[in-house]
Image 1 (cartoon, rainbow, N blue to C red):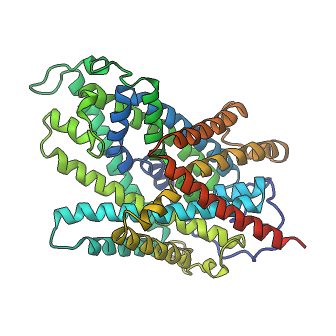
Image 2: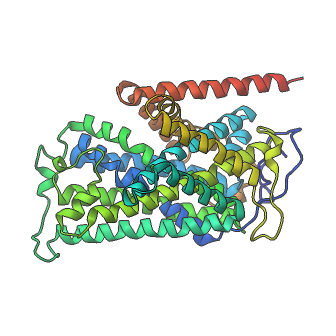
Image 3: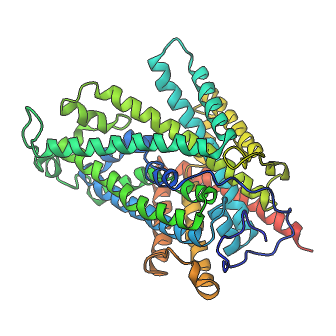
Length: 476
């Protein structure tokens, strides 16, 4: 069997035949349902929402709500497809394994390595941004020392036991979810004039300053390009599901509970922001959440949001280190990465079953990325960051293409494994692919986004070339 881990459902369809390495020691099942559920809820709530949303408001105005609705719907459809495949065929390599089963080894190799590269590069941005916040609090400690501390702490957490990753993410996610819920409650109270010394805001800001569509539908489209990548990160839920006691049930429950609630958090908080304050008050790079909290009289709003953003960055760093290590471990299991990465720690289920070499390989490249970010943020690292800027769209496209193939196969060979089904198959799957292609083409027409598409296309082309050479050499 040429899979990252064997399917748990007895009638799951077989993957492509392989003469790859023998099965490695199994990963531990140290994650609980509460870990996975909270990871699904909080894993995608990050600095892109708390800070980056200001850029979306600046280009779309109040209609940023529509931008988030469109981008969130696209992400929700992708997660539904991924949830369907992961519930039927759970594996630590998730969509990389599904792509291999559906389209061939070249697809699993390509999407797996591109996703790994994306995570370890973005990890540098998160570590550096968190260090900048911490340095502002404690200026006596240099920024690079904060980066080193964060990397060491989360490397240690990921090396010891998977339950440590789960606990870190559970509490990080809980704080982020609590912050969003508190913001929504305070915002609604402000809208209806139920806070002390405030009058009802009403809907004047939704229709003033140029109306709901101050920049027209072009602004909405620009908003989609700005916010769509904020939804990246949900994929880790399906990777983590393989390390629960009941992967098929766990991933189904996590996906069902996460996608709609996350859409509610994103769209709901944007609606509150553009209702409480005029959209012209927002600026790119400045958290709109801080501006709203300041306007309604919440003391130390800036520091409160700094703490939330700090936690969000550390949470993303932890999740990316986990996801990258499991992805490269899965690649090694299928013979697509060095076999030395298959080493799994021994011991009980609580402390064993951790792919330590895969963790160290991922964090090593993460350290390199951090050093490049600290030394050459506007040259070498910027090119690296651009080279993964649009990779998420490629990953989502491969998820949709894989689901098109595997859904038919599952209906023929293992209909009982389809415990979670994609809506309106295959029409919404095709619509999702069209939506992803539209976003990619629109990015090409956008001067700011074009470099990301071009550099990411180059990185994708290089990986596809390596995959093609490997396929050619493997043929007798």
